[in-house]
Length: 124
Image (spheres, rainbow, N blue to C red):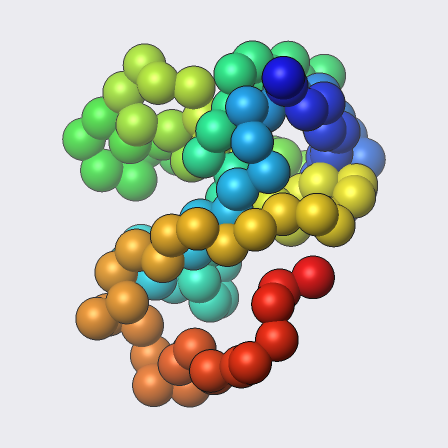
């Protein structure tokens, strides 16, 4: 089963439609993600296909790694390693509900202010 999601940038100049294999959410707190996003990066790692409508600018952040963004408003749209399908920005989705956090990468480099608070409730 695949899930269709839609999203885009802040100014509306770039839109996308993607198919996901799961509603999983990954967080990254590496130094590059923190600088790019002014905080941890939340992405959708289970992309099966994606189409973009509008001009996507590319920044090569390190060898073999690209970050796609809107050249007009600067909204980050995805992160991509090599020729793999891109991991889409959770924040760029039209509907951000129904995703489960499954992975937190680079927890050791996250700022102290971004500590995870324990809870007894299941995520909604």
